[in-house]
Image (cartoon, rainbow, N blue to C red; front, top):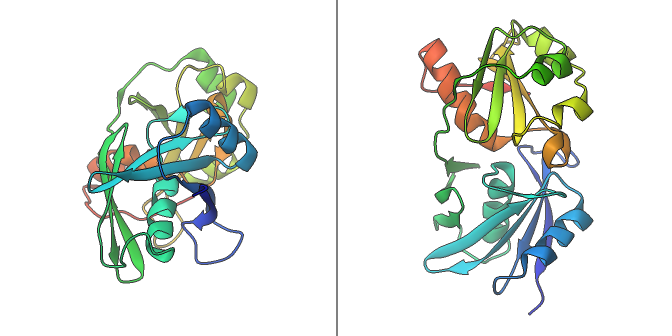
Length: 230
């Protein structure tokens, strides 16, 4: 059987919105070069590749340029496809075996609940290119195993950023999270995610960045449940 490929708009209930992901269902493991070429052809921020393994599915993610270790929206899209296309029953938990360990997904009414690992940052010195590329003065700079996290003073500063992507792409990390406190009603914080080094200038919504952001803002706001805007 040939691979089945789906195009899914994650984090939205409207067509042509949210963050699009490719989902490729395989019958067996394929060559890395083949998967990378498919991701280039899809030309989306992430394309997920999965095949059955033990009691779940092996899952890998590729940008148009490289393989990455963790991706939220393509995992959400993969779970959606497995249920909607009949690979799993609607009440079955999805178990994904990934380079970041076991990830799970469950339906909760009209929502999908993902169980992802926390990826807290630690305070870090800012490389010169980071401040120059963003054109802002950070309140705080941290780093985890994937990304730099840059806190700025306001939602307005986050929204008005116009980064130098060429300069950002020279920093040897997956990406840069820029975040600030929200002034929009009903939200706790705002964020944007830039990853030109892996072929994505700006990702509309980056689920894996919230493995860091949730921990970061949870500590500052003393809250376990957070609402974010992008």
